[in-house]
Image (cartoon, rainbow, N blue to C red):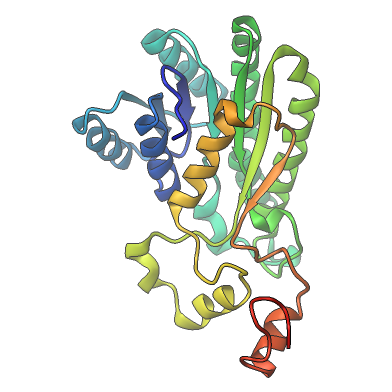
Length: 274
């Protein structure tokens, strides 16, 4: 079992499904977790649920796009626990995807709002915690990116660009601050849906994703949480500057694979033999 006993984690976007599950997984592994989100009511609910189970958690409402709010968050974590060992930049601009289409449909305002959450927020947090981690001898940063940052798509252009820039920032931090004992990696999720919400995904969309995954199911929040736990732990001590795809293998094969399977059902075994 992977343990993070005594480690202090700051986790953004903690009121969302991935954030809440990650907070639980890290806290159950022995970490002391500071949860933060801009959604005050949902953040309070998640925090209370975990605290009522005896997990060592605290929360602070913050807006990661505001530098003053970020400073206040870091000060709160230090006042509560005295240090920060792990930063999980989990918050993302998923709430803007309904406005985020192809390049010609984008507005400059949307681009800026999306980038503020996906890139500027994580940058501001990193700038606050890196000096602290350096002073204490090291630390871990995990940035939650997206599979859309790794390939072209017909939608979510602003979201994908911000997450691609976050991948680049991940490598830069790993390179620049590795000698100070700081590791920085990113996790690129595929389509992640909580089990209780899977019915909200239209069946044609669900089937399209499942048919293109090597692991034939949709991703769960726990899949991302477990990846964060691993990267935050000493088991990943020699891993830095990487973008780990946690997507069921949707990007691991040629784009024709699902089509060939559909053309000849049963002709391609799991061993790749006809």
